[in-house]
Length: 44
Image 1: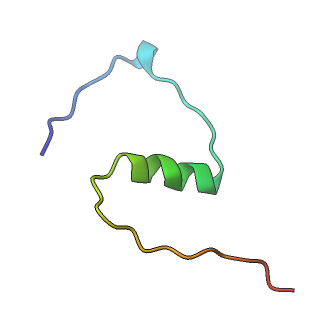
Image 2: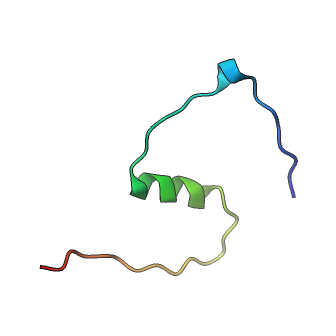
């Protein structure tokens, strides 16, 4: 497990993300070997 590093408030940047981008960003930070996923298509 890694230690949490404190960052000064003047160095923090907040950015808005779409749902897809937020998930992609979170998964990039994980140490995964396999991820099971399927595409979601619109039902019409």
